[in-house]
Image: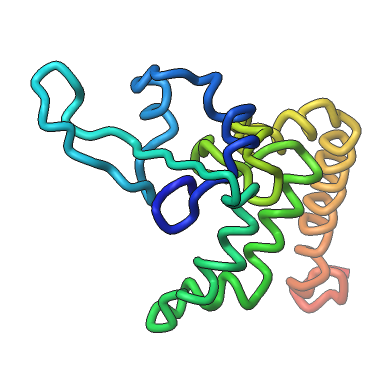
Length: 173
């Protein structure tokens, strides 16, 4: 996103990305995977930096880039990519983003999937959001523990029935 393939819309870029300033370390903390890097050729500047581009008629969200550029050019030879998109993986990630105001699972990316780049950068990954959302549900844990005790008691109670002890097959009554 915001590279030569998916140039960002300038107004949204100014709101979401520009406030990060020229702090290259901050930008690099979001990772460079999938982003274009350019050799600076200077001893004082980092050897590579994230090349972010914007234009007046650019894209306003990653979702726009995905539907117009990435999905049509998808690597059809990669069955995992095709299965992820066709079986609803992308839609699942988009829904998690909307429900919990998060993006991604493995790390905090610079951009959301469906929200505009003017809402960047991402502030929380979805695993953290999921844990935060369900962390206060003590009732669910109590019910699960109680059911575990009941099921364990049922298993222990089934041992005499399945051993033949109840029918007297073992020489008992």
